[in-house]
Image 1 (spheres, rainbow, N blue to C red):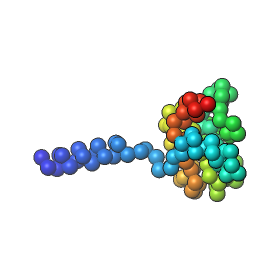
Image 2 (tube, rainbow, N blue to C red; image 1 turned 90 degrees about the horizontal axis):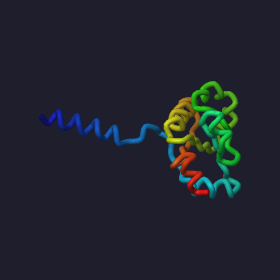
Image 3 (cartoon, one colour; image 1 turned 30 degrees about the vertical axis):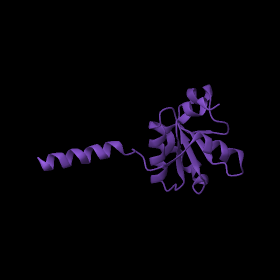
Length: 121
């Protein structure tokens, strides 16, 4: 019985922890950084139609499904702060994992993603 309870607690703790390793940044923090000379590289990992319907000013569009194919182009930003966003965080976290696996060290996820950005406008 103790083993079953311990196993259940372990599974529950794993489910409650984030699915990504990247740090996060709030919309307010991002706005402050954008207003200063410390603006990060902002990457919109949504699809083209979503990007064209509206995006954060200055964001580069690299759909999450194509991130690994664009690593050469993104390599110039390897030492820069990078902020990723999508709609729900799922694609952004997958893209963050791909970038971190490729050696990018300063990857952050936008809290609230694009809906959070829109709500703050």
